[in-house]
Image (cartoon, helix red, strand yellow):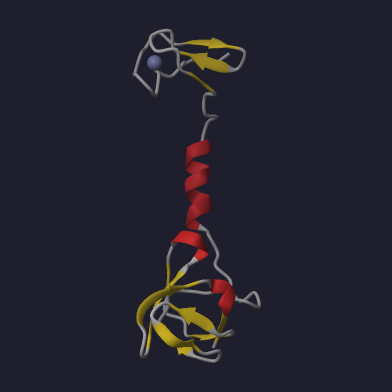
Length: 121
Ligand SMILES: [Zn+2]
């Protein structure tokens, strides 16, 4: 049993009740699994400790200098980024599509890279 049944997250209805490990809201019919104590906090801590590693497993940090390990195509640039290109002062981001490094590359400007294509210099 849950001592304190939470109000409905959908309509804030207070007349919620427990049924088979679910909490049910009679006002809007919403059913959900009540969060265990501290579950939200734990998820937050996990995000905080996200570790980004380079192609060979070195942990990357903001401000690191890395080397691109393979040639990369760049939209609108015929030559692209060559393997061995040095990238200074990277910033780790939660980018889309696994692009977790924000950086500037000489001749290309600001762009995002995947940590799997760089190696810590
Ligand atoms: Zn509701």
